[in-house]
Length: 247
Image (tube, rainbow, N blue to C red; front, side, top):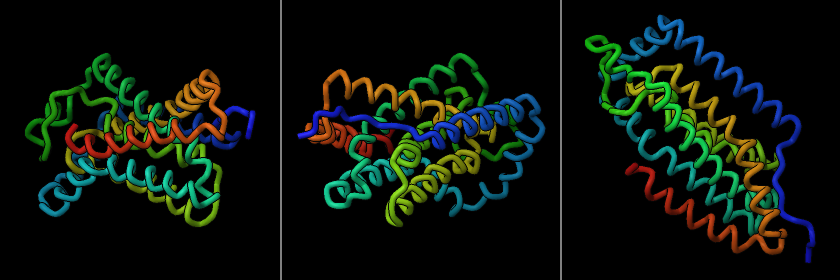
């Protein structure tokens, strides 16, 4: 039996990546927002894509099912952790995934209401060929923040393993990136909104790591006693997988 408490850690290189990425993405998003011309021009340049029904359908599918696909990948990694040593560390990181998603959702919702940026379809009425309508404010993109918040803990916290784990990390980032880009293709967000959401997701990772470690320490969860926690978190992610397409 192990007496050490379960803990998750961001490596030094991962911490540097988080800080650099969050600050860079936030700086770019604010620069684009205040500059406006490129932000608006980039969105309007996608108008021809919105005239293609196939591209619009793909964008809507990425928006609706992308986060569920990420949850399914995390659940698959959790199942693999019982057989493959390369995925063993995923079990402790599931709590980070849940906390990261919750933090990004809460912070993104609050920031939207505080900043109150109008949606592109309102600011560019008559110019933008938007395929979706939303009543909520535009900055930051909730889909960008939430999809990356689900993917980044596995990518950044789980130590690099063999080919299978590296492939999963690549697919997680790919799906999250498709969700982000779909928001632009559909005309729902500016590029600055998406970059702002990505910056928020990176910022939430160390917060989620600290919160998870606090829970593990308070509950005195050792690696040998991690199974009940993992089962509960698996249930939470399963519910999210089913619910996210309808939220």
